[in-house]
Length: 291
Image: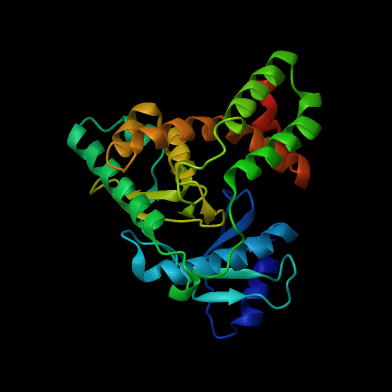
């Protein structure tokens, strides 16, 4: 894999000197390589990932001057031909390491934890407030209907995953989805630009300074419910840290209510991804608690 990707990068950028090429086994949708310990290249694993990477690249270009924290800047790219193994983007390595839950829980200084929450809440507020008007240069994206997306997810879970789930788990999932879907159909939020996968693996920090140093992987970014990003924080760091973040965000209590539901879908989304793409590990990781 590494050799193939290295050859592809040099085919497109023959003047790029590659002294070291190291794979990183963290991407569900992309194979990730670190070049010369200074550049990160991402290759979609699946055909559908190519369109996602194209969209992500356009979004990253648009939000570069508008964000409060460092984000990837895809200065290297190849979208011709649109084939798995050929398509890639590359950006300069962002400093820092993922802010895993264990690292957060080891911090004893409450002011430091609050500072991290403030940085993340400020970033999300900036991101969610970005103009999505095409007249301002925002790239054309499909209209977002979170309720319809959750309906389609529920249908996929019923038809594809229910056969692998115990009866009680099926009933619990049905109650959760039907309660959400049967709420007042009038949306209580304005669809905004969201990150889409705002969890620990994509939040970088510097342990020495105890500050957030960057946000990566905008592959799930698009128009959606801002609460979805807070659900990622909740899944990664727990409810207490989520409370810190939503307290710094407008309409935080309402956000937390929707985030609770979205969070409950994450494992099943992983299982469904595994089912649809033949990824046995992702399927098992997602379905194990429901068997």
